[in-house]
Length: 59
Image 1 (cartoon, rainbow, N blue to C red):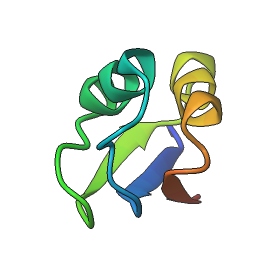
Image 2 (cartoon, rainbow, N blue to C red):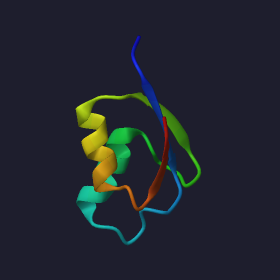
Image 3 (cartoon, rainbow, N blue to C red):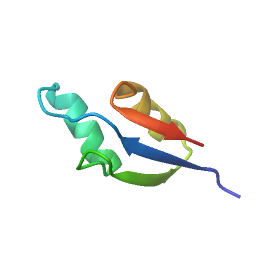
Image 4 (tube, helix red, strand yellow):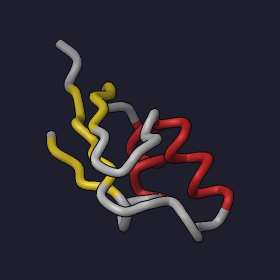
């Protein structure tokens, strides 16, 4: 059974570097308060690590 991670965007991407905005878009986080569920993979964990100051993660 695959594990899943629930990711919620808590802070806006306005004024952030372009690379961080691209990571948020890649995760599917387009609006503040939006929550997405993604598979727990090393690639997703790396993306989360890059924007951890903007998101809230639940396992």
